[in-house]
Length: 184
Image 1: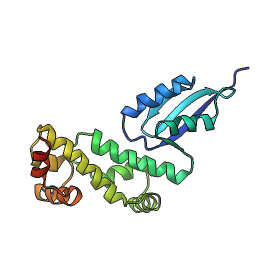
Image 2: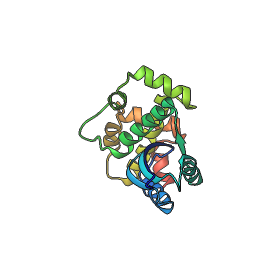
Image 3: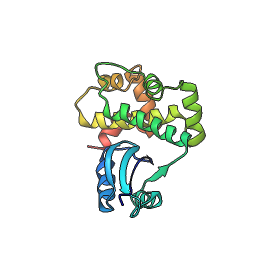
């Protein structure tokens, strides 16, 4: 008797596209078929006689992830993935999209609700989370030496190079110049 189940699962801490391959490979070892996968969300098919949700959770935990089941936690993970997607994978050089506008559109919720929900579940505010990711992306961009500091500030939605520099120093403890020098 065919006992295949199709399920959509939500995964905590899946914040990089490189994890897509890792999760797909680990599931394949246990005959769990990945139908579709994106950051934080996977549609799978599996034989319920051989696997169950506990097995799936154990696989994820063994590779540093976990399942998310409650609605707010899923939404918070989707907010985190939206921030990561926009800051790290979108090239904003020709069109500034305010981070809050992008998240509002992606989540179809107002920013205040998103922000309050995020703060209830995480140890930092949404604004701080966004800033930390913007600075991480700035680090990558300045080390690539592909863009001027002015272009990096523009791409990351800072109002000026000075604003970027002040935020960079506040977050990292180093000036942008000191950071570049320390990494070359």
